[in-house]
Amino acid sequence: MRGKESPSSCPSHIKGEGTKRKLARPSFNMQNFSYKSFLLNYYLTGFFYQFIFAYAIYTVLFNIRGLSVFQISLLLSWWALVGVLLEIPTGALADSWSRRKMLTIAPIIKSLCFVIWFFANGNFYLYALGFVFWSTGSSFVSGTTEALLYDTLTYAGKKDDYEKVLGRKKSYQWIAVALSTLSGGFIASQNLDWAIIFSVAPLILSALFASQLKDVPKVETTGETHYLEYIRIAFNEIKTNRILLYLFVYLLAISLFGGLEEFDQLYFQLAKLPLFAFGIAGFLWSASNAIGAYYAYKLKRFASVSYLLPFLSGILLVFVAKYPSIPMIGLLFASYLITTPLKVLVESSIQHNISSVSRATVTSVSHLGNNLFGVLLMPVFGLIAKVWNLPAIYLTTGVFMLVFAIWVFSVRNKVAVKTANG
Image (cartoon, rainbow, N blue to C red):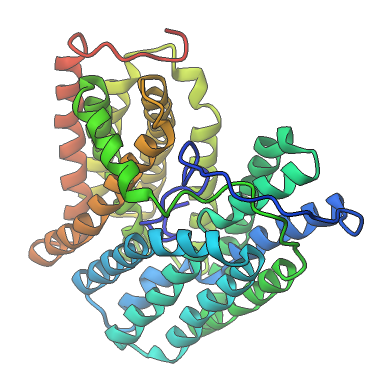
């Protein structure tokens, strides 16, 4: 989810899979364990962790409080960087300490971000400090929830339910983001600070439900203690696989949208969208991404989408940049809708084109590369807005996507990408 977890966070379902070490399995008494109770607490922990009213307005809040677009871009870059730096040590901590306690502490740490922002009143450094707590909380969660789920299902004899349970948790989190964004816009229209401080309450609920989870003996690690060694192995794989290199370049190119959407609230403001409607816009954004991801598999038969969809999105972004207005917000969401499937399809192609046993680590490296790219991308977008204006960010991205689509078209016959069907 864009920005909801730190932009730097490696997807937690990737973190450590394929790089796991077996741990000792001490005896565990399952007599007092309720599987239904575990699922309820597990789902509610994730749901309330993402039920944040501030999601609807946090970027525009910075601008209203006096920060420039460039300063906002620096905050977003800092947010991503902190997450990258904490990814490995928090994973190692999850291997050596209680995962239940980490999931209990994580939302409390994240809530400190919104407490600090409530009192920040335009102070750049306090907003930066808030992002430290947000990233720290997200790093505590990343990988830990999946590791706890895997171990718990293993001891409950339900390991085959892992994908189903994880998928449901993620769907509930999407619902939480959509509902909190929708309501957050209306709350902010009454008082911006309310949308910030009210975000603390759901996080406290998340901590309460997490505290009801049980620590079972650890079957496998989160994979972080030897992470750097696995990265070295994965890079060797990439260097000898030209198709993988092409796919990673493609993934980096379309990841521009992940950085671009962090500035959407500023575009809404420029388009004179009423503040209460920010939540509605955020809800529609979530819906467009969900629809694009849901139907992505239907497009895998058509090789032409690899260049036609980026080309079409580029055209839409040019119009979005040239005519900032409320109707153009619809075109902006349309550009997200048609490019969301590309990310799903490219990540799938990466999996089908990895030949070594380091499958999950190669995937993690690709996401780590995207995260580091995001750290650099945010200030670049900020500089573009500073030298020209905010719409120039969208224009630059649109022109880039047009050029990129032409390049993909020109090399399409030179790169035989393996798919699920071939």
